[in-house]
Length: 479
Image (cartoon, rainbow, N blue to C red; front, side):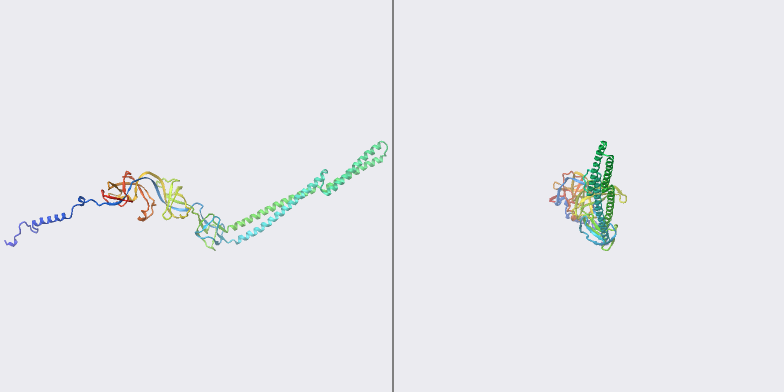
């Protein structure tokens, strides 16, 4: 065999010589060894600087956060329209202007109403003059009746002192006739005595009797003359005149009332051309311009008073939220701050379309910062967990073994120790459902209730401990 076909001892076809294989393995082991030892066997983990706080026990409220809408209180928002149809000739206010209760904010064309008031005023003056005349006539009739009655009584009663010259004269005639009758009667008695004694002839007795008859007739005539001075018919006529005057006065007063009612109606129609605000507030909207025609169904101006507002919120009828009238509530607006109040009304009716119930909260808005139709967050405290274990919200980190779980880092003997926890109520000044940047969120003090996993005596890392291993040494820094 030729020498070139001889192979070195220890070699296999297509392989390195065995000594070379061993050399390669040895070199590889040396290279691995040169890479260094396991740091966990020879080095201590670096110290981390993190803020540490005590776990706290505190009363933490159970809060229901829902969206609400601001609206004016009942009767504190008014869309003003005229009581009558007409053409708008003036608008005296602008949106944003403060107005007083009763202030004129717009006016309709009132020329026709003014003419009607003038006509009614003239008619009223005429009716008032008629009443005055009727009163004067009544006074005269009353005086005439009084005089007629006085004269009549004086004529009937001779013992009553007479004040009328006619009656005085007639009474004088009666007195003279009575005196003549008395004289005739005395003369008859004397003639009768003389006739019995035979001293006087019978003709003298007859003459004396005739003298009495004549004197009696004269007396009767004189008495009749007295009654003729103040006859009863004058009293009756005066009474009739008085009744007529009374009826005329009643008619005149009725006419005056009717005309006055017409004038008041005309004045009312005139007042309808002035559109006044029924409330004090602020002009919110203007709907029409000068020259537009309006009527009771077409508003001109809207005025609102937002010193006290109602926040309306809807809560699901299926949600077991123990909300009652009188519970504390907070109204939160990111632009206008927060307002404390209480639940004032809860509707017993469920809206079938949204399956919600309406809740109302009355809010003191004397500063006027909340606006009508503004969207706010309503936070209602439904319960309080007393002496609950709480940690800062930023202390919570995700559990790497459970994506839905949470844990915190406690500090024990200067080292970190992970604790799995179950969270409960979150107490936060950040309204639920509002989107805030992380930088802004740190401004709010938020704490979370821990219902299991902590005893309440621990100290925990406030933030920044995610991904650290158990036993990592820590240097505490101020929060």
